[in-house]
Image (cartoon, rainbow, N blue to C red; front, side, top):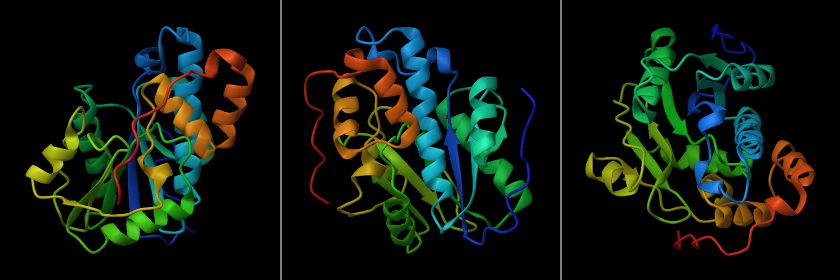
Length: 236
């Protein structure tokens, strides 16, 4: 895949560069099966990423968004929103992709403040993200746990601080173990609500997804209205 939009928008003054990893759409969101077939899952995965990137770019604290993906369709769609897109090199998993994205940012701006953000936050709001970034700026490294309180949806590294992503599975404990500070924030449900399961999808719908996800859900109809409830977010 050809790299696209390798320069940030010169008119953006925010201090933060966000790195968003996205696996190939054909492989994404496997835990939404069997409720949704592969085509529907790919459509939703792209819509989630589009709403995530659009909300991030609408946040005044964000200078640019770097998407790391080998999916040409997703790369083109996200570049059209204003993201910088780079290949997933060396294609060695989620944390390697994040490290590559961080190197891409810091090759141009060695003192950049970085944050990793999940690509599946369809209910993300720019104002909520601004609150998280403001809180993170008080620490060399910080993270926000997901709604279930097990994983992580956001990890930051201040200018000059090492990135050290430890995403996947029970990453909340791993990020704390390597010295990142857990952010104790309430009222940021859109930053914490990633979507892996049908119950997660229902919870995201209740929060109110962005326009790309809303359009795909409307097109899919009842098939995209799973029963059940997602795990509630712990306080703070």
